[in-house]
Image (tube, rainbow, N blue to C red):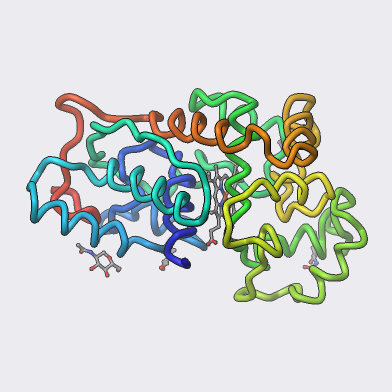
Length: 270
Ligand code: HEM
Ligand SMILES: *[C@@H]1O[C@H](CO)[C@@H](O)[C@H](O)[C@H]1NC(C)=O
Ligand SMILES: *[C@@H]1O[C@H](CO)[C@@H](O)[C@H](O)[C@H]1NC(C)=O
Ligand SMILES: *[C@@H]1O[C@H](CO)[C@@H](O)[C@H](O)[C@H]1NC(C)=O
Ligand SMILES: *[C@@H]1O[C@H](CO)[C@@H](O)[C@H](O)[C@H]1NC(C)=O
């Protein structure tokens, strides 16, 4: 169960270089890799990918990339927690570059506003609907208190709270998260944080999304209409939309032909 959401996170939060498995690479004495870059708080689950890779290499060496394995395991992980299932197009090759600083510049931050989110998604070929749909991935898993400390305790530097958070929810969050808390975890979809469902959209509509990036979905016509539609229709089209957007995301920055390599160990460039 734990493993599951980590792998989803690994797959979904690896936009920097695209789907080339670069998030799996270990740092070396002369390179700090993505997995050791600043927004790495929650990155885990590498051992699941490594185990799958070991099994696949034993059966047919040098054929299946780590990037494909990551895409497949994320899909399977989502299915296991009652989410949708979709055919994953395969044939990705593995990248040979992984740079820590790229995560900072290329990954959307939890404090990103709607303009920044739309621009970052657009730069990867994902549209505004994809943004609304893929954010639904926050129906599972947890966040560290430290990720929302500023939002709760010092939003504009005056000891205040982000007014876009439901004021009735704030005392509850503050009772769980002290200002300097680095370890406590918060469910992103309290009550069903281990099930893949459409509840995320009700959470956001109630202004209880944990991140500013979740709340930001209410600040655009298309994304806010999507949030309302899924909240009110009990996710009528969410699973289908999610499948389509995940396939689309799985095509970002894919290496084919002679580009890249098939890594022997997912953590090490050949
Ligand atoms: C829209 C841009 C996104 C932003 C700004 C964002 C940001 C974050 C942050 C800050 C965390 C928590 C880190 C921590 O404090 O531990 C998180 C967790 C998570 N995110 Fe995202 N995320 C985004 C998109 C996505 C997408 C597209 C998916 C999947 C389709 C996804 C799936 C997850 C999952 C499953 C977790 C929980 C991991 C766990 O339980 O450990 N996120 N995200
Ligand atoms: C995050 O990066 C730091 C180094 O910058 C590293 O010590 C730590 O182990 C990394 N955390 C994860 C979960 O990989
Ligand atoms: C979003 O953030 C950027 C950078 O901080 C800022 O320039 C812009 O005005 C913000 N946009 C909105 C709609 O808040
Ligand atoms: C709140 O933010 C202001 C401005 O960034 C800073 O000077 C102050 O020390 C912060 N307060 C706390 C309690 O962190
Ligand atoms: C990659 O790094 C992890 C954590 O430091 C370590 O456990 C693992 O053995 C490394 N993998 C390889 C193939 O060197």
